[in-house]
Image (cartoon, rainbow, N blue to C red; front, side):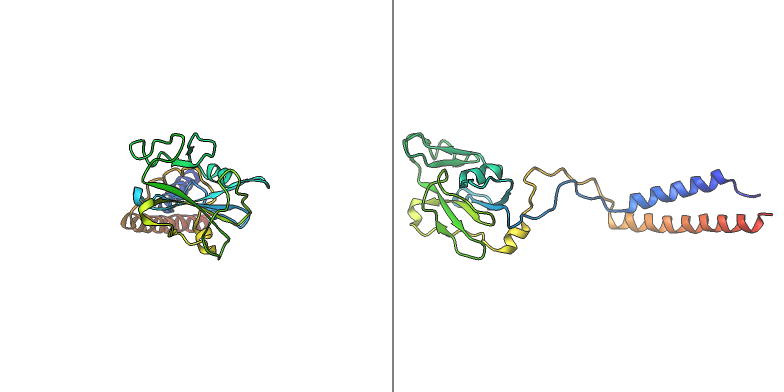
Length: 212
């Protein structure tokens, strides 16, 4: 009996479904790297606990300052209320039990503000976050420094091209990838797809040979 076109189409559809199931899921977030037209923003909590965060500040105006870069990178800044404001809290740290964020700094440490050109060395900024102009390709860092540790602020993140290229340009939180089949499941699925492909090809060849 000659197989119907409907049967062949159904088998082909099943084959397509198996191949799609076997293909690895792709991430929904952007993987584009920070470019030399952006500013790399580094926040190192140090003694506060936690790993350094490296983000990319994009779309900055020509007259942007360091504060603009930190905000563009998604950081929340809080300043003291005195006539000369200082950053006293970054992303909620240190907490109110360590730093009151009143008219002046009152805790055992402070957020040191440093800048660097790509491939250069970290140096203390000469002005505050509100005044320090940033240039495309520059690096900006805030590292929490205990007063007891002295004036040498050892920023761990190196201001290099490698660091920039590892920093994603999209600062939004990426969606989780869809569940992916395990290696064993993928191998079985691919084998079934190959077998089914052979069956479809065999049916088509037999049908053509029997065609009057």
